[in-house]
Amino acid sequence: MESALALEVSISPDGKLVAFVAHVRGLDVPCSILRNALEEHFWVPAGADDARLMKAIIDGRNRITAAVERKMLRAPGELIKLSGADFRH
Image (cartoon, rainbow, N blue to C red):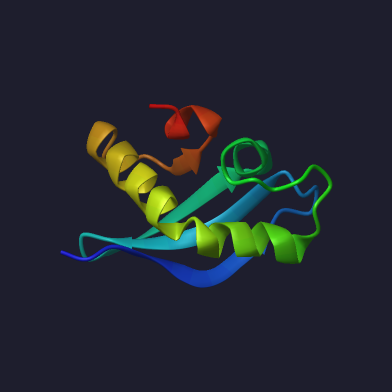
């Protein structure tokens, strides 16, 4: 089964959260990732604009999708909110 991220992302009004949809195991799963996780693990500079945040999601889609899949296996049915801890292994 193939997994992917939707190209449409939205950024919270305060800029601290990026929301997206992951297509995993035949399901559309609403997800989000904290801005500080993008800064820490995806080389997004502090204070980067929305376009840079979206580029980080697209460029890091394989790692982000893998983190979503791991989180889904650990806690099926729960909201997927990725933080920096999800990329430390």
